[in-house]
Length: 108
Image (cartoon, rainbow, N blue to C red; front, side):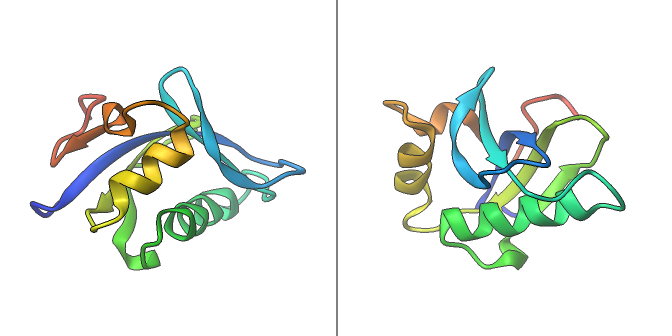
């Protein structure tokens, strides 16, 4: 991870009828995707959805640790608008509470 990298904790809802990014579940940003968790399809959609929602290139978003769990850790490259977009998506007074610069908040 680079110096301008944050680790974002997300909660994934695969097989969603209404895909999108926004809201909080147990302190994690919610990402809803249509794909089912088969052959990594849902994981691919998670990264695509996050990149689009955060205004980043797909190459600026990657998994820190991939597991079968719905709770994931995603590394995102910092940008001028990242914090403002997160604030909006989280619907919280301070979206940065869900970020950790250059480290994994889950201890992985």
